[in-house]
Length: 89
Length: 196
Image 1 (spheres, rainbow over the protein chains, first blue to last red):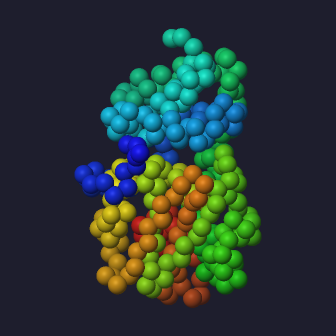
Image 2 (spheres, chains in turn cyan, blue):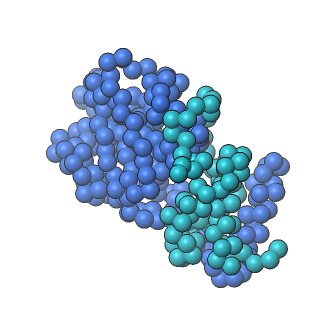
Image 3 (tube, chains in turn purple, green):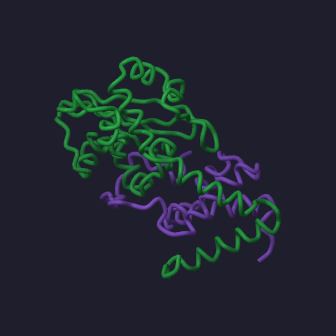
């Protein structure tokens, strides 16, 4: 079964958008999400494969609508919720 | 970042999540800071460029690099074990008749330690979907037009296996030193979307 992320060979995604002199992150929150994920993996909260799986099992419409680091954030939230670490509110 | 109005709700969500995890003792602020600093400091295409320049000037290193890149990297003070988990690296060499280009069709796997943070286009659905179907057209969008008889190989990266392109040494650089050669190598050259 292929998931929404398995886009190799698909058509319809349009032309490339190539940004000159692109910074590593486009907003401070993206850098924070990056750091949070690395640290949660290092601390053994979840494994890298589980993180990837959490990105890839997002609902297709949610996956395609989210930016790259929004996907990361959603995956982190999913994994934390499944481990009872998100708490209320 | 102030003034980023469009990303304000998600920024606030990230901040709340961080605060909650720090409060619960799941992560420490110092860990978050150190993780980001390490990535920004260590990961750069300067590393990949040094590898290419060494391969161009040291035939023995070139052969060892192409045979077993993980074993050869320590010769230039690098390794594939700097990230969250060690990855296998395969270096693929461009020649007069063959060209290589990298992708991760499933997501964004990329040798960050050797090339720095990946560009957004590398992670885009447009690049991931198209480069395996019509590499010649995609490379042309980068301004790289290859002769019709150049064979193109597209390498699809995975969580455990990463790739790096060894570009062709530019003509007219016979007298260049290793650092001078390294300065010619671009990130796009190491991905395969540019000649050098």
